[in-house]
Image 1: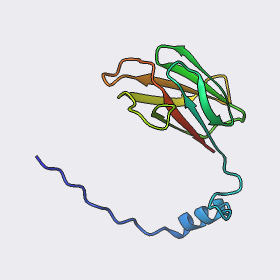
Image 2 (image 1 turned 45 degrees about the vertical axis):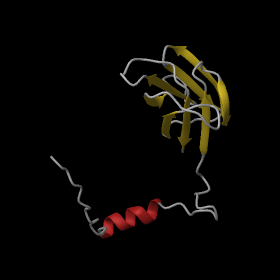
Image 3 (image 1 turned 60 degrees about the vertical axis):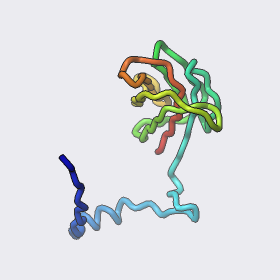
Image 4 (image 1 turned 180 degrees about the vertical axis):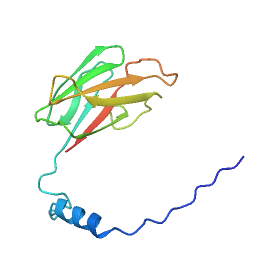
Length: 132
């Protein structure tokens, strides 16, 4: 069975939707980012040590495949993006999965879980981006 994907044309904005969009608009800088935007990141080794980052204060392995990453700012309400990866410039990262969510009790933290390709908890290095 072959499945095809068809593009769907976007409907036009209603006047109310246009007003809401314009009201919420924050002017962009020359670089294209609004002046209030913040981006932080961390590269964490499989043992939980922080390899490098921007505004990342610490990282820790809390158990097999369980980590926390602490940043220097309140990141409540931010978007957390994680991907498995190495702390080196090249190589082959082991297959697996990652899940990220805000850290309960720490407004400046992210809770990370990593898994092997079979879905079992496993220590894996990862890259984490926080976008506010």
